[in-house]
Image 1: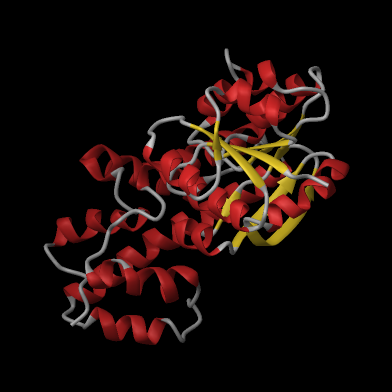
Image 2: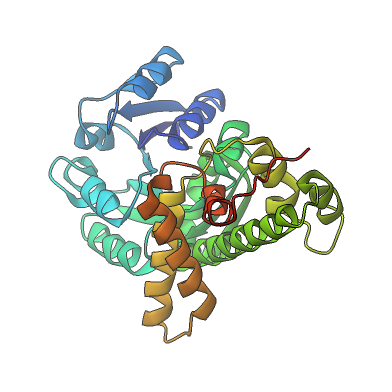
Length: 299
């Protein structure tokens, strides 16, 4: 039974995920990756700090990674002082980052040569889900490894689904984010149109949350963000732009036309270029409000 878990990438999502593993009874080791504050909070909560990623990998049975992009995952897992340098035979890597399925498959193949098994386990649910331990987690990789780390996954989320071979879970995650990004753009356009017409966006939301377009973005995101003037990031706009780029690249590799995804990616690229990358994804709405001079605040 797995007892010792290492966590690399204790940022907006990773810190509460690691905290929940502590609450679930796992002995958690962490390492400073970008800043020390979350590491210090986790150590105060009972985690152990290691001096390097390699040292962490040598001390645990499972390493969970939650970093920002393909390059960061490769650096953490294959770079100098990384997991492949310290990890031994039988170590399992659970990568919760959203990266290219092709990158994940390539890294997994390289780790296998060192006796390390990699699972791609992207997450959905935002910071709220990470804090509550209710993340949806989809998993790709060897089934035996998945079954072994299932208790670890259950310590961080609730809806846990095994998808198939390495990279397959990342395909599902890209599907999710493509749809979320497109709905967010559509909602921004719709609310701006209503506001421009002088209709109270609060009333618009009241109707939409019970209409056929209802869902997480309409029912949960809007009333806690643009309708009340809150753009604090739960999921940064720059990361959504990155994920849309990954989806386009993968669609190209699969010979799939991606017309709407390409347009949505360009809109997020524009918003990112205008300095909105560190805001929540819903800040895409400012492309519309700034163009029309209206506010989406409910009355």
